[in-house]
Image (tube, rainbow, N blue to C red; front, top):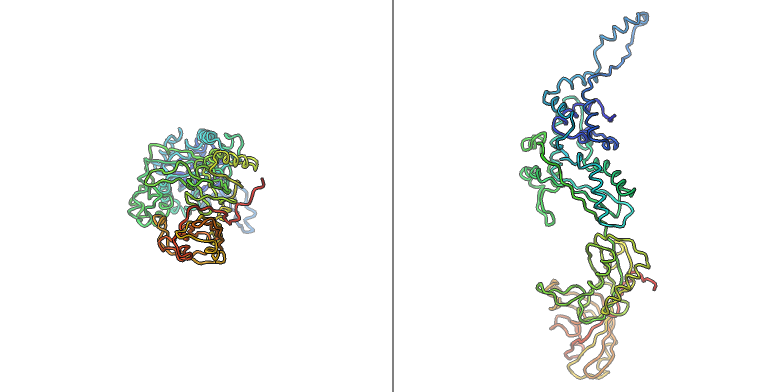
Length: 541
């Protein structure tokens, strides 16, 4: 039998007459026993009807204090006296419930005896036909079709916002009734549709997936069931006029009537005002919700270091005015094999700084990281990651990857921590207008911790804010080539514009190499020799 109490009878009668399904009736009766929801709706409805139509009253046997002389009364006389006592309060309440049942409510209860074929006015069918073996099979088929790797899954449910409005209407509908009976119904005690849905479906989905656990807490794999009901979308619209402060347009939301906004509005609106604008109980819908199943695996993060050997390869796709300028990029050459291996839907690429299209990255390479979105394959051994690294390196001679590994989201932040305090080393091939001798450039080797004031370079002004940034060149060394060329090796603070230090950028970088050598200079080639970030950790060959 259902875990119901006598005080639930007026609630059950009101809700059944309003068009609520059997499971929503249990929710409003605050039934928290999960097994009660797993019964077939027809069986539950039948039990509810038997419960409210049962007019037998349990009579309490009150002990009566009798005088000592009454102890000698006959048994029949004592029973006769007891039968004339007034009935107890519980019996009176049960009797009054039966008496106040309107003809309309009685007719509704009788009508539903043949089976509840109507769509529930509160859950819009979610806890009826959309909550059973058929739906569990559809969920399992969607999971299998995705061919994901997972050990457990968490089932999430997204409900249309108007369910909050309909539930509030039904709550007000029964609140008056229970108050008249001296009872209390706290809205917070009503079982949520989401909870009831999960109680019913979790075991069924587990069975359809061959025993894979559907957990209630955290899992990297989420199966979401999103319900929509266009027929009743307008149920929320009156709240925008009564509580305009709760509904503000946002960039990422298609509608202002989000579930959170509707809940906030319902907390603010007075009962009388709500009842003025919305029917109580809600109107009968003609159709059930439409479910859509989506699978999502949490992101997997891959990190490593890359070398770039080509002077005509941008770090990221180079598109100007909608037109692609280069056929490939570092990002794409690295990402394509990784995306394919993890069977991910997309990715986000980031690195510790970036080099220009004509700059090589040598030495131990530049740290990079990729967030792989919704990967269908997520388990890779160290040997498999090494093989993936080899696949990338064999795909092109323009780049090379090392230390490829799976990392955590938290570890990703280490790449950006204190980025401007890190140091980077460069080698530049410099041209001078005036002829030079070896001794003309030797003084540069003695310059230490030179502070630069760098105004945003003209070449990046279209994408970076105009500002003057202080950067430091910690040390420099030179290697003479001929009367107009020499190599300049620099160790600098990260974020220093090397090209602008060499040619001065029309005086936007001060001091610059032109000022130091007292002649015009320009940079012909630039290589990044090292990026001094101790992440990710090296992977033994």
